[in-house]
Amino acid sequence: MERGLAVIRAFDAQHAELTLSDVARACGLTRAAARRFLLTLSDLGYVRTDGRLFSLAPRVLELGYSYLSSISLPEMAEPHLDRLVAEVRESSSMSVLDGDDIVYVARVPTSRIMRVAINVGTRFPAYATSMGRVLLAALPEERLEAYLDRVRLEPLTDRTVRTTGELRAELARVRLHGHAVVDQELEEGLRAIAAPIRDRTGAAAAAVNVSVHAARATVGDIRERLLPPLLAATAAIEADLRIAARRRTA
Image 1 (cartoon, rainbow, N blue to C red):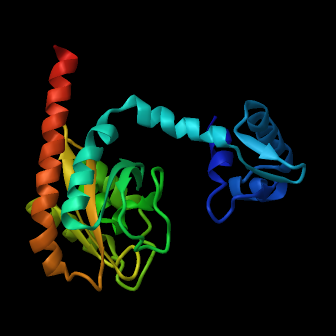
Image 2 (image 1 turned 45 degrees about the vertical axis):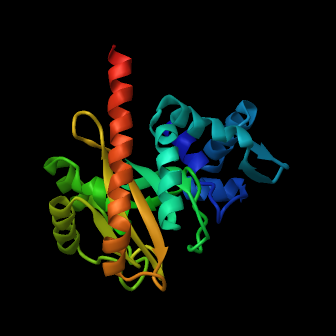
């Protein structure tokens, strides 16, 4: 199963079509093993081929939607994200922590301000994102230390945090203030602020952000103008979560 999922993950926006050799190389498999996995995935409807090139089939979306349909949080959050975006006129998203990445589970865009298109299911390294830092800061100390021991801090821009010491200090600030601001560390020209969504146990179940082009707002502007409505939105989502939890246990 692990290798089969690795074959699926070999396909992305930059590699929408791959040959058998491409898949074998990307996954560290022999050509024979790669062929077996591709043919099995093809038989199951997750991969299609013209005989030479392989690509993902639409059925692969079922894997993601199975997760989304099993939780109520994104659906519960969307009306609040809609109101937040209408108020601040900037894009807002919700993500969860998956391994060392964040995965977008809800998004309400305004204008496109990133070169990379963001959709539900988009992944980014947690260390370079405001939502990722909120979620990392909420981890138990043992899990956070394990993350800091293994993470490779790739410089996505000239401003990206470079050392685990710097990241650890930044996460301590996030813990202290309850929100995270990232200034052009994921992409030049992009600033974002994020706050956690806490479940009834107090754990950070997700994070919500507001992102803005750097030409429209300084870091100070973001904290002054965007943080209050962001915190109001996260509080409203948490209130809905508590109501839903009470209904499930009633």
